[in-house]
Image 1 (cartoon, rainbow, N blue to C red):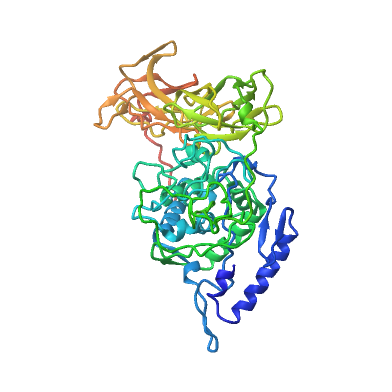
Image 2 (cartoon, rainbow, N blue to C red):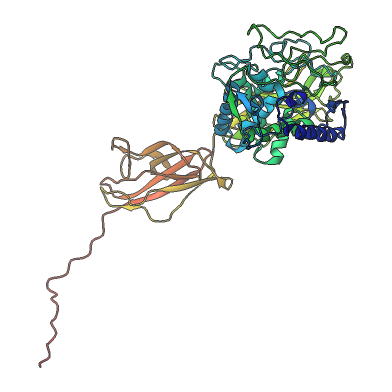
Length: 586
């Protein structure tokens, strides 16, 4: 925070110093947190939340920047006797980065309006993870001018996550690293990645793609981020640390008070990181890397005798800068991780997967991770992926889900939700970070159905020859007592109760050209299970006729129609003249 003091006038300095001291004292009371002689926080193990497994966060719980927002308002109001200098680099957000956050939030408002994702939350996470893509050092399409990489997640102070992408995203074929301005680990990006700028690619190094992916990640469990509890859970799922939660919350509040656009590449770079034991960083250079295509390379240590932390990729890297600590790192542990011991996946008793279109599958998919000898393996991430030509999703709204195995080695996928596409599709279970054969589950979606049809009215349906029926036929469809919406139906004027062939006389409907038709197809009940048929007409044939309505699922209803001449009143007999009454005399 020392870098901030030079940007504040007197009056703000004392307040800032006091706030830092209070923050340091508060942090020193947290488990695993100490302070150095300058009052800087040194995190030897941040306090995790029990709500989300550490290995299942978006970032793999990679390091993050701990710089706090300035105490003065983003848009200060100067007084008559005080000179106030706006902290433009902190309150401002680089233009392309800001645009990416706002577009991502707008897209989520369309696709998941119940999430209430504020763009300021994306800005807060982007600030903490990468200093807003290294101060907005991105090209015109939003891609960072060089890769932003975190350290190796090799278990030495971080999560232990073996390589899952063959180094495709992070250039590391041994361990995963957090990648890009929003610091996604490759295994999470594989299912969470999005194309935010419409170029046909899902690139974690592109701020549009990364911001949209972060938005979907934060909204994936149906959380309502306008509620404090859900907001906390979403942030903790991104990086499982109470310190991280409080820091993101502070930046969120700061940006909500107001911000503005600044040119790309002019944003300030943070200087303090959560894994920095000394707290001393060289001032990052504001000059972007010379070559946009060149991968980031490890920076030189501050002193030749000071070893670098593995995975450093240059000053200013979000979630894993090349700023060298002054303490040596611990070599990676050679103890096999639970993932390393997995030999295969077994079906953990999943029953038949069948659901009607639009319904949630009652059966959930269960997979068990086992060693070669058949022993269950706990704390292993299993990814479930929906494949095939289907619009089915998990209850999270996504086609992917990663679940940790429990003490019995079992991972239970979120409930499947059928879309409108009928037919069979496959859900594949794989072990994250381990190359073992996948396990396939077949699921079937059947068309919507009804088992009961009933008229909504009881008025007799009658008509005179050549006329039209005054009342339209309306029916209600149900399935097991519940409303059966969007159910396909047909309506046919049949010959007789035991002869379902189409009649060639009597009542009829009209097509778009006004011609008689006696069979209607392509009908569907509405959201309330109701189906109203078009108006019926009658030809010159009198008698009793039948209309049969049938739906998918086997529900049928036969309705009686009558065509008869209108009844006429009898004419009076002219021989029966009315008798005049005698008029009394005056």
